[in-house]
Length: 155
Image (cartoon, rainbow, N blue to C red; front, side, top):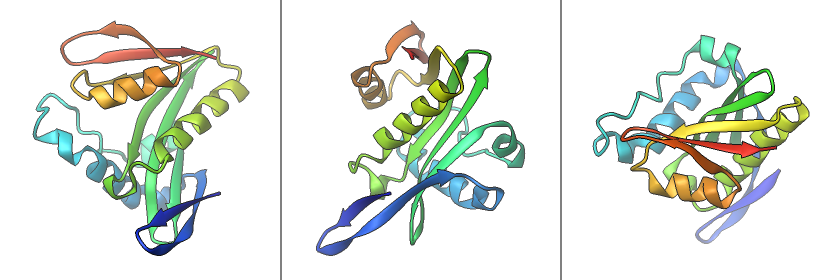
């Protein structure tokens, strides 16, 4: 658990846990809120909020939450010794508090514990802050096109 603060309000506890099926609605809302600023600007961005029960069953998913609900989501898969960070989203109202980094650290540790040798992810090249964040955390660009940047991190 860690604390997040609000302007003039006492800090609240944020819990990080595995997602459950009953989180699906809040996960969708979190994804929609996080990607809303990019949807209009990037028409080739896939619908990342189209998460369903099957996705939750076939991926390992985490949520960061406080007493008001889900603040951030991370979703990952594993194939052999390679993990893939399929989605990471932080509600805009919770940005700048380290939740994204905390979620990434959780997924990386999960991949290590599962015996993975590397972890990959894909993001849109016009989401430059994402690319910069991942590079700052030890990822490197493996591939780049007009619509997708693939990054990899050795574990």
